[in-house]
Length: 199
Image 1 (cartoon, rainbow, N blue to C red):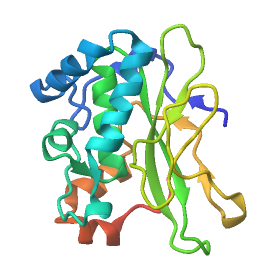
Image 2 (image 1 turned 180 degrees about the horizontal axis):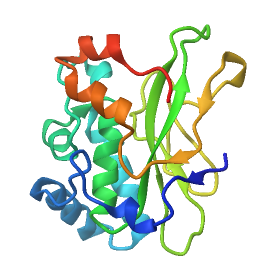
Image 3 (image 1 turned 60 degrees about the vertical axis):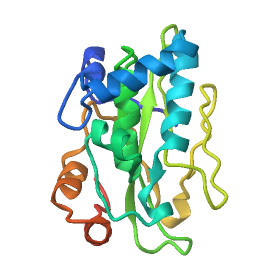
Image 4 (image 1 turned 90 degrees about the vertical axis):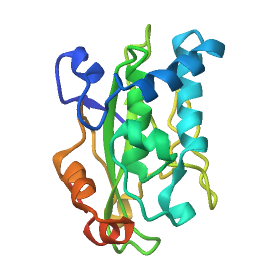
């Protein structure tokens, strides 16, 4: 998939905001621990991806009602939705000055009903001109997302025949419809009823 930059300045993909709070001590602490064994950018990015994918549970997989959305909270609670896990991974990567964007897909159920937005990230490593999407959602029930740069191995390849979409825009900050849904959700049950369905 060909990605378009939404923001012309690469520095935008290193910025701190309410959701991607990579100056927080908790984010910095985890980044520092990962750096000990993974000094180069590629090794660190892969380790950060696997940490968020595997050590932070997807709230639906573990039936957790909490809805953290700020990266530091996600990393403390070790649980979150796809959006929250993307914020956490973006924060860990930006903490090491690796440009990271937020991306979205519109997915559906197996039969093409119930569309919903899915969140993931794109990373741009030093020496590589291209962005590479990565999906830290968490592998379960046959999903097999891996950290790969030369091709995509995402949790959910889209099915155009069911009107599923890979949105090509690289967002420097969480999309407002996503962030608003997370902020107002009392719990995951409420969020599931109010998830955005398209951008």
